[in-house]
Amino acid sequence: MTDDPNVATYRIEDGIAWVSFNRPDKRNCMSPNLNRRMGEILDELEYRDDFGVLVLKGEGTAWSAGMDLKEYFRETEAKGLGAVRKAQRESYGWWRRLRWYNKPTIAMVNGWCFGGGYGPLYSCDLAIAADEAQFALSEINWGILPGGGATKVVVDLIPMRDAMYHAMTGELIDGKKAAEWRLVNESVPLDQLETRVRALAEVLLKKNPVAIKATKDAVRRVKEMTYDNAEDYLVRAQEAANSFDNDGRKEGIKQFIDDKTYKPGLGTYDVSKKSA
Image (tube, rainbow, N blue to C red; front, side, top):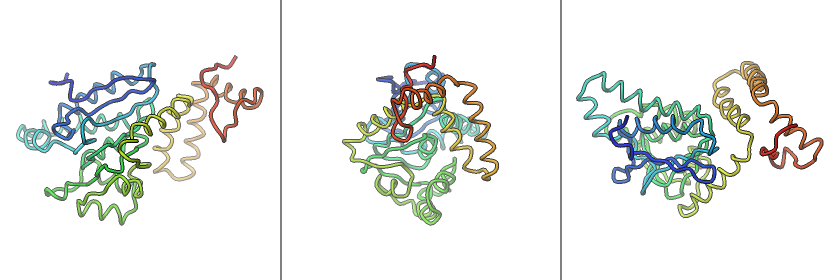
């Protein structure tokens, strides 16, 4: 259990789980305690049926300023290698859980997103930032390389020249530049951020949950596969999804072919109806 469960909190509203980093006085930097609590929250929420989309946000003026330099580094390192490894398992562990989460996830980046914050940013399926948000790989500014997966994040998401510049200079970029570089899907003015994220969540809530889980996993899995390996994987993944929820697939086809109530290229079928 965490020493202070309030370092990360959540509420469920209209089918959306709003999960918050809650250390606003510390710009939501991630301490061992916060990382432990995030793991607990993901466990508590994952298989609940009263929400369909998870939004990860930051309280106050930041999303996350990265790792807490005092608690995560200095104080943990003072306890020896075992404590360091434990802290790493707890942080990287919940980021990994988030990448393969049972529900679609959205990062809502309202302010600072630095260094270690790139781990959960990448782990979320989608990301919307405020134009005013600020991003940086700040590690170079205090004498280390961008570790904890941060270098992998920028190399995966943005072009090599931009990744090099971003990692080597430590310079700030705003939400607009982050969207241009594809660190996030898009950016909007801060006063429109929650509205845009809520609208995106509502789109996802209308999708078949089995299909959307299979889809998000497929996108991550096939990225590093050859075409032939990906083709084979996707055939098997489709078969597995069909066997798990064939009624959903049948209902979608029925509404298109028989009922003529929707067109797949223009929208989604009504997932509240079950195939007879």
